Image 1 (tube, rainbow, N blue to C red):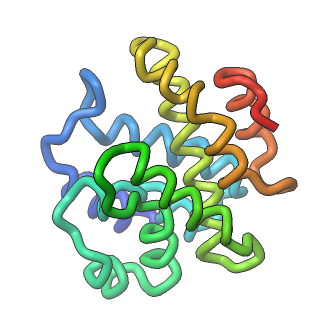
Image 2: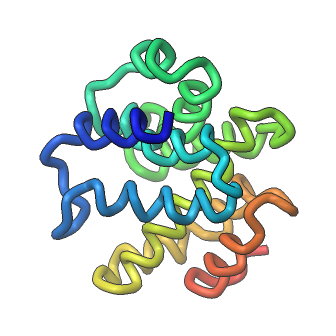
Length: 169
């Protein structure tokens, strides 16, 4: 499933860029963080590769479900921004969704872990070369943390996020 998710995600993102880099660079960074925090769980790795396909490509949830199963498709859908007038509205709706999740359920656990890994990958990248984005992530961190953090789930990711973005807890 890992190789299939990687290939599908890279093909789906096509020529998209992550700053100056091919989008694959961002996906691989999220996968590395999620894989370490999730002990290499194949579902978590697949969700990490696929986490942006519903939001940033023309792929639909039904296609993910058919190819990768209900759990992966559900987890990717959980981390996908809902429709909204602007970033603030989208993030508020997403945070309400994530805050309500029971991380004892597999799709929710994968979604929360991958969402934290995605934010850490973004924070690391923005710290290196995009101070404007880093400022935005710092401003959003307290609300993001309230919605996504669960004690005992990827604590090492949260420790680094709190160092880079400031302790919101």
